[in-house]
Image (cartoon, rainbow, N blue to C red; front, top):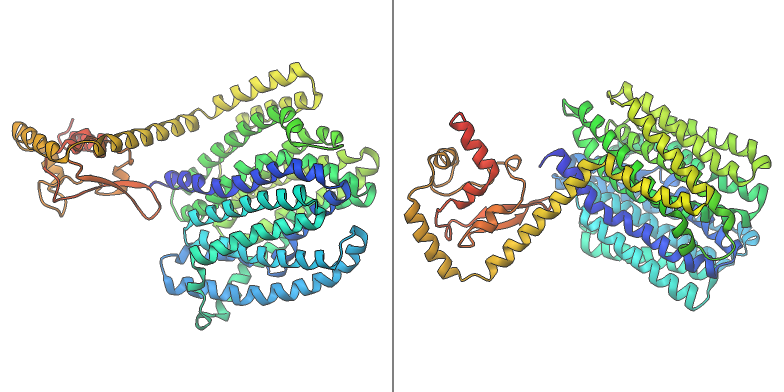
Length: 587
């Protein structure tokens, strides 16, 4: 399968695992904003902030090594066991020790944020199980089991939605109910991973390797400054808001981030698949051309989704936000722009990961984080919440420019400056029209967003439609074959085969190259000569062809020699085979 095909396939599967958690956050947002006080909402956000920083830092970002190191050995069961065992032996005791410290540290926070002892225990338990889930998810990605990754995300998301409704809306349990809902969602995910992915089969203490642990920590260790810097960029402004303006103002800022966070659905989906693909492609001769092409694709997709989402913001805000959060709206266009530059920066970060340049990831992110914090603190007394959203935009823009230049020393990535500046100008206009909150401008924004998306993503839209059409044709052909009478079809095929005589000379010449009976059609000599359209499957009169998935889940035809009547209709209908036959005859 081509690199682009693998990227598309991984993107499709991983989109499930990244879309549903975001969808769960959006669906539960009206419940949380309507049932929690602004103080509880602000405290809930602090819990999520700590989750994203504390244990990943304490465990030296070892989960990133799980993914990157397993990619290279995913076909070697012994080495997979070595990596997984070594990571778990390190991560579990370190997490327990770190959470014991956090429990006592939260004693002071609990008095400020009105969290009692039971809430602290629930938070620590949630952090621990979430850490195991996070590591396990990176492991299943590393061994190319992306479907398990996505299903676990589905279970986690459904569990969160169900328990938020039960605990927060129905039982009115407030902050404690919210934490219980989070805990139950990760319990769902961990249970599935334990029994479906069967990671426990790879855990064997005899395979623990201290040398391998040092090697992985040398890779993941530099990610800790990156993690902390990323954390500073994403959430330091919230702590600055709490310190200067109070926790209620932080709740307003948290709500303002929710709708721009939808843009990260597309970003997270593509980037997770992209990091895997980028790592595999890094050794190819044409890596530079591939990365350049993917940059243009990513840039246009994110710009297109940006336009659609910002045009829909007036409607989404009214539907999803409850309570006194009107002040959050004006922050949204600024945060949308910041999220766009963050998405593109993360894409470029995938190239650093591909070449194991984890130090560069940390350096670039640290520089941007310092800028974010300085701008935020320097301006918040003067412009309030705009300091938080503005510093986020400035720091992510800086990170995007920094990485765009710095990545060139690793691999040459070509950019069309004219195209980039034109699209950014359009996005700025879309943001201004959203900020103005005028009905006429909202309509113009919606039309502009749709037109721009289609204009810059024509190839993407055509590819999706073509793939969907091929899938429907395959399903339609399968339905038609299942209703046919096999005996009658076999007789009819025999008559047609006798009438037409032998297969074409071109087909026989092609088949003679294969190590199969001369008269048996060879449909997939290699995967580059098959697009999986299912035309051969649909045309076979005796049902001798079955579409079977390969290791990566893509369908390819397989011929049953016992049922095949050698009519060679499958060879004649295949575009790939006709082209090859013509080349053999010099046409």
